[in-house]
Length: 308
Length: 273
Image (tube, rainbow over all chains, first blue to last red; front, side, top):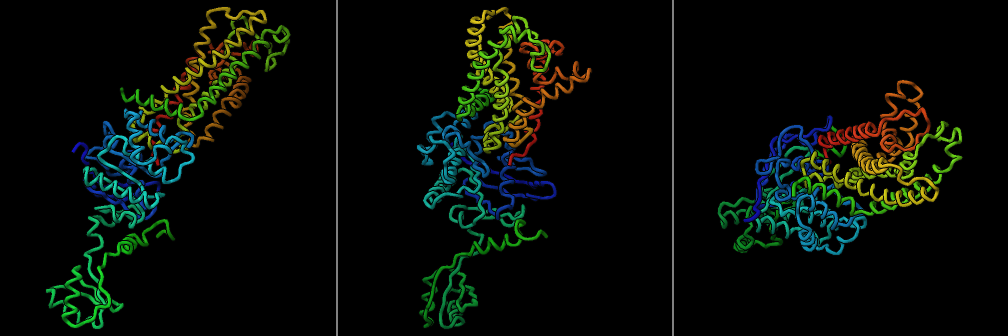
């Protein structure tokens, strides 16, 4: 593939601002060909971590490398990394297109590539107006166009869905999956909302207060999916399920339903019928990621309440 | 294209893609023309030159033909170099203010090269504005001088002054660039630099001149005083201590280098967040 992804490695990355440790000994890897969600509440240190990766903020300790090299050592950075960060903006008196041209000029990229990306992100007409009047969604699209200028192998996007309308979020989701799955690029997307990226990301890295709290494939984050079944006699159904499905564990829940560690709804329904039990409810249970996310980061947000 | 050429191109694009440049172009041209006309009339009027205490600070104005021509042609530069100071501040200050500095350093992570690109771009911009200023002042000034019976081009030294005025503008832009980094808030940077260059420094120069050592060894080296030496216009008074034109050029260049270097050192170490 012409511009397959790179792997990104964070190793013992630490940043202190005075007495505040914004990022604390962070170690994780981001793989090519996948979309990695970089999650954590506001103030968890996501932006600082990304800025250290991009050579904008100097780490107190540790390293962040792109295929083994620091950002500042890259010969043609825009061809390797495309970034759209928060706290990045456009001069309000300059058009979006001219903004991209100033960057393209510095990177030796022709203006034709600028126009190509404005088409791709759907803002060719708006980009010829002064940026002072842009909506947040417009700026997000412009930032995305900017990040793609050099056809990079790694995309680093900080809260890219902020300010996008539902149609824009849908488009972004499809686009990021296309870049990673079809083109093999590495995509790192930060968000403070898990549900915002739930359907987009393959892997997750969750941080709270600058430390890593969970890392792994999205599918494994919430544990195994199961099924919820409600009947007149949960204990009898549990026995019937044990006989019909072999070693399938099921747990009675507080609300009188039965949680079955299987997603085979047909087999569960058949077993209930065979046992002569009514089925009042039968549905697949997805992991409650939002609750899990809250649990992982709960009470750890230093921006809330008293410092410990 | 080398990375440095690309950096310069990008900086020039940044400057010419907002509306600031043509507003300033009008300001530079108009101030050059208007001041050339006013000074052309003033410095060819006998009563002004002979009048005792006619100089701004009480002494008698001292000027030969060359100095009169120099004064007339560079009359607008008093405004011109303040505008270049402003341009220098804005070339970096706007990047902080509108948070485009992130994009700039992402595109070219080698920060000293970005700064060198800004320096070279400012020198080119200053040369262009300087040329514009000279077109205004020489057109209006030479016509005024001739009409008043004075010599429009008494010596080749006038041409030297005109060429040096371009250098002066470039050096003031670099002072602005450095100050725009050292004072991170753009609005504060603009107010402070213009205030210091226009009001504080000339007054400080006067105060220092009351002290004999200061008058000879400090005051002439201040940026505004050095600028006057380079341009070699009429002197405000006979006991005004002034460097030679090249001494003034070196002093001003040293100020520009000090500011630009201090700014570069600061930028290289800065966390951009």
